[in-house]
Length: 448
Image 1: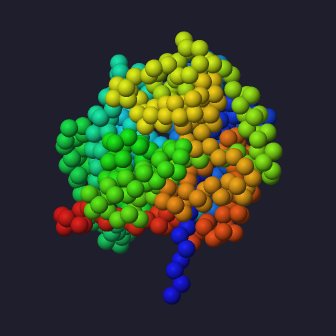
Image 2 (image 1 turned 90 degrees about the vertical axis):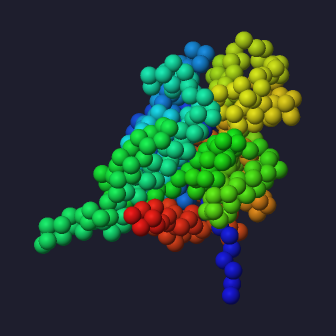
Image 3 (image 1 turned 30 degrees about the horizontal axis):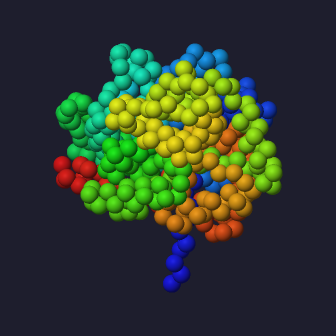
């Protein structure tokens, strides 16, 4: 019997008009269409043409203006991604639809209902990226004086996901009868109160929408701290992460996969997909020129502001052509701890100045940057995929739509020719694309 070759998973990560901090200045970016549905539809259709597993939107709940230049020189507007996914469900047929929503600044009932709705509207293609948020600016928009402490955010997130899953299960699959002759709409024996009451939440239930098509929309998680890794091993089905070297990525991969046993899970039940920022040229010279053009577009204050945000430490008073100053211990950072360590390690390892460091992270923002011809890009992805560093990748185009077009037109065919990425969709749901099983209903399992 022929053994089916392992297939790479790919997400198209949309940060419009592109992932590079200066993408809005790129001559080919469609910056004037930031709030135009036509642009988002075009991007989704292109990604679906490329047979991506999913499209993915990050999100945040604040305008970031750390040094007073964010509004003037950075893109600080974007549509609400959960609302946007509802519209994109209508103009796509197979591709998964995933978005970020924070457990720190939402309630479980709200998000359970929103993502269940998207899953129904899309016939089973929804995914929820669970984040805890990392910005003080967001706290100030939600009636708080300061951000929740790191461990408290993750404790709240763990309980939040638990409640959401209970709500999704509050209607069994066979609960809806809709029998006009008998006058029975639903079987009350198959609709359950969740009666959750714990440290963070008190939720009675049931949810006022039927169980999602996928049972649960796919749960994605993006943290890579100790708390983040444990949360992912317990609750996530996809983890987005950021690493610069294959050895770091392999160590993370082994660590998280090994933690699954603690929660009675199999290795294939969690897909690890690092972020990748590809600069693609038909020749090496063209790729180098594209990278240089992007670097030259970065306003100095914007670069310093981005770097300050990534490490949760204000660098605006330090000499830009000197190395990083002495930074706080990671235990004293209340922002994104993993990103702090990753960026600091990159600066220390390569002895970069503040300017050089922000130029390095202005595109990938801490994720891995790869540059070259389509063959070289495919080589780099294949190396990580086949050597225990990744199950797939979250692709972060430098500018849009051109950066996505390049990947779909030039790199995808190369991956397909190597037999490590699909030629066409074989399933209809996001779970089927990712090779994930449909979860059993907790109330049916308990025979309630």
